Length: 377
Ligand SMILES: Cc1ncc(COP(=O)(O)O)c(C=O)c1O
Image (cartoon, rainbow, N blue to C red):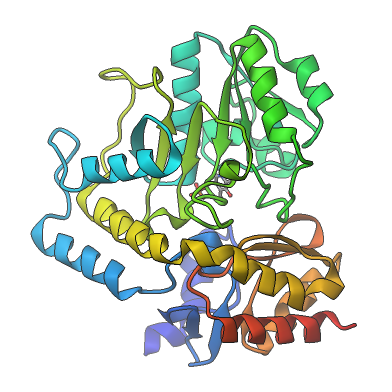
């Protein structure tokens, strides 16, 4: 197809150069994707932890197509098919009380910040160094990386950044003007950084002492990625607000925030044209049904990765895997792609694997062989 041959030229001529990319993926099935030249890869990027049920899972495709044939959009001025059903399901699996939908993770963060401000009447937030919560003006204010945040300041949301894992640092900055503490239970963009034991429970205690809301960003870690619906469910901490996106609808754009009893938006306080639309809700419901069946096997698959990659000290929580590689990370990523495995480099030379949750044992073994080959002894 001419357009495919010309994709680099079209991109460089007409698309803003905000991304650096090399190949075009044109087809996917399960954990496999094919590029424009027909080369096949096992996809351990999965749209960065998005394609949870694999590419084009037949149940998700059917749900999307069926709903698209009936009603693609109507507006939140009306009750929306599947919306209440999905909210109920998400409330059940997260242990929260009510849901509100968005179109992305960043919007879910924005919603969480708004909810925290409006219900506490406080203005300030605390977040963690190397944490990532999105690129909208609101979510960027609580995202740490100076290179992506500082060019856009002032962002209008005062936020203090504390070392990830440092509870005494947190205690020093949380006060009665703080609306919320936002935290990833495992830092994803930072390279799959797992906090010390007790850290998340410690945040809960600090928040309770000052009447501050604990916002847990499960955009990357949620929807079964770590072997439970939420990564925070591996701990005893119960958050006030949880955000979700990425894996929630198998690649159909969607996000959500969930909040405990007593925390909700009142009429007119928040809204969105597209959020929680009929097709997104249908895709998410089908996604959850698929994940329900495979969730009990995620931890075992993670252990298979851990064992196979043990010589490189991987950080593993279910199917969220990080390996510190250093400055050679881009070369390792390239070598893996040459051998038919897609992985990506997160921050600080950390190789990240977030494959579809449906990845098979044979595929895991092939990925292990390729990564071990690329990293060397
Ligand atoms: C933990 C976390 N929060 C929020 C976001 C932002 O999500 P989105 O890119 O859908 O806006 C991301 C994206 O990588 C993320 O990893």
